[in-house]
Image (tube, rainbow over all chains, first blue to last red):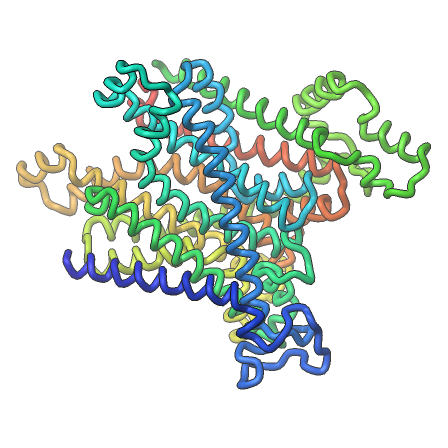
Length: 276
Length: 308
């Protein structure tokens, strides 16, 4: 058991370290890499990984490592915006449903459940097919699609604590509902919300790369891991490295967020760890 | 609550969900800035051409009429004609659907075949090598998107060791890798649920009673606990099936399979609005019906659920 705890903490540290490195590289990409993510060198096509191009070059002679670094900008940006939009929107809906009259609660939750019952990727493709594609559309679509899970979570937490003695006492003293939400309810649901943020972030990164892979997400020549994999698919025989490294980066990022989410949810709720 | 009443209640919920979804789809298309006719015709299209496109799309009529017609057409499963090929949307979809369906069914089977035995084993032998293997696999399965897994499978099993065809479905073998990449990726979720469900079941009082009675451990585990632990898995598998359909759309793209996903994507690339609209509603219907069937199966094997 103690060994398991240690292993978990180690994994958590590794995951955090990886993500920190990713953020640092995303920010410092122009300083770290001598290459441009979009400039094409047709005489340097399909170079295998080597000292000059650590992870090789693609079908247009672009440096893969550089494109991965710039691609992490897209991934992280989509993650941050998606989580923010989903948290704000879902949080507002969840709090209104939890605190408001039952009619509003039922109506809002029916709507949220309808959205929640569909696979995220299908919804994302659908929304993007209507609003057109590109970075901004993907982020907004993902934010809206990811909000029901926050609404559900925040509503459930709100309902479970809103009749606790101290909140009732506060209400009896005449505290305004808004103040009750801000002072008592929000601080009490933060831990679970943080866990969900981590998981939603991971999902947003996957969906963004999936959309870009399908050609309905981030558009060329911008760099995105999904877009790199889309190009790679046509050159699997000539340049397998084009397919391996962006995917590896994507998988490690998702893995890290999942590990962090799992670790935090066990830390916040130790009894869960014994069951799951 | 008896089964008929429960079914009626679920059917009502199914209808409400579909109604909400189709309403959202309808209004999303119309509320979005930009006239579809302008998008299809191009910025420099003649006003007369634009009028013609609007008339074909039906966007020249009042919104309420359009909405009523839209709902009516869904009831008939008639989504109009494709803007590009002029074929009925429904028949286009039905031509492509069998492949996607086969992919999703195979994927689900692979997922269940991997997840259930390993999940049960993990739960029975907690913190053993099997359990850790299960944990590692489920983390990997959740982290590796199906389309990248598909690419990796191609790299290894079609290029490095040419066992399977690179692209296309000339034979059944062409479906193996796509189904594997779908199934392996989603097995992670099923594995987690199976394990949790089995652990929960094994900690219940009737298991303690069975042990106290001196029943053999194998009988307790695989006859008593497993049977009950698998019940919730039916619901999860139903939901997973929907995800398989969604995932199939992406995986089809990896393996160049001419399924629903490709049809849908080309519709998006070419802004074929009737086809997009029909495709979305079709997928929503299929998905809701699958969930409904899973719920009904679950309520038959576990009548307790009908009381809630």
